Length: 111
Image (cartoon, rainbow, N blue to C red):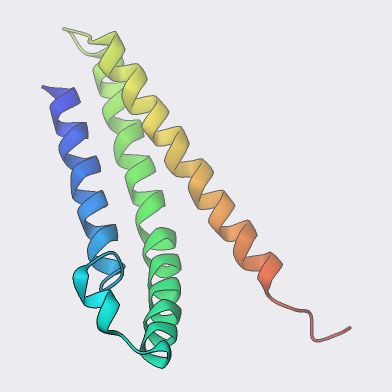
């Protein structure tokens, strides 16, 4: 049951990312002019960074709590607990990577 819940969460996040990347990857993308394509791409980059920085820590905590509760529960489900722990670690890693990438892109004004 827990694995199904994790799969639904991952499918939901994939759907959100696809929607945030709109209109790229759809038939409407062929009709965009170069200027519209550039504007949409810049908007999507900003949106993805903001969503990732807000959502990844929340997901890491939720997956971590679920992993601990599954691991220590009366009917412990060890494979599901390990899967949730891995999901939590991946979310933390992606969050740290997004923060580090954001810092590298900014140029220093003191140079």
